[in-house]
Length: 317
Image (cartoon, rainbow, N blue to C red; front, top):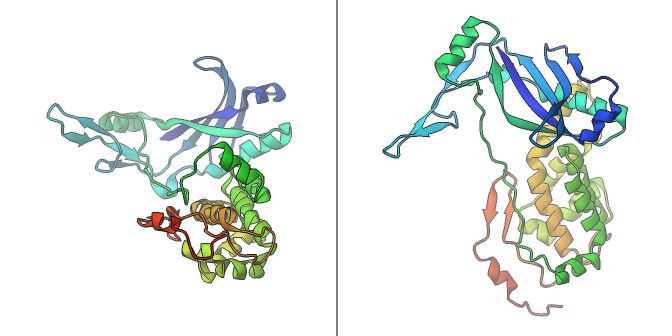
């Protein structure tokens, strides 16, 4: 059986910089990649089709297939799909490597977007019978949810824009730079730079200052978690390992998991730090309230009594 995935590569203007189209590659794991121009709904598109051979036996998934049909009485009946064993599925590393190589050769910033859910292509009659028996050539695709939420609700108006322009503009610039990036490791490093800039410190000194910072404590950061994030920050910047390919994939996954949590911290620091670039310097009083945040386990925490934080405090500035 072969798994076929299709991706759109942008910008399409890249096609003009490629001397060989269609461009076809055979990779070490047996994958076949074909980059070509195709007619889309409205214009020409640059498509990358990846075909990966599945050597393991496919499993029929019914209860958690993610697909169902509604009967006339309103009952949902799940539809079966073929599941590719986790240890036999395609690696996105080769796809990323090809995009990176094209980016380097053309000196262009490239993005790759998956189209559809992929297709299973039979290699023989046995494969064809299996697909026919299940009733679909779309493979099972596990669904998941990565929590991400702002720590407060923002009103986008002239007053708030002016406050950020005239306030922690360096932190806002670094935060915006992180959002412009696509790779989890790059975003992680840029959000961490927000913290380095805010406190004017790095490494263990920075971790200590954040651990003692009241707004960080308010969303349950402690010294041990911050040390772990610092270690991950170092791994995201260095390839000092005997297996750099494996380490790169692992670190990207870890950074992706921790990004919502780190974003919560960077956001709180931008909103509360009164003296930018100083280890201490205090916080704005009253500080903007915390409505919600992502905790260390990646779950969303909602603050029921957040409006009480709006009550004036004695000696407020």
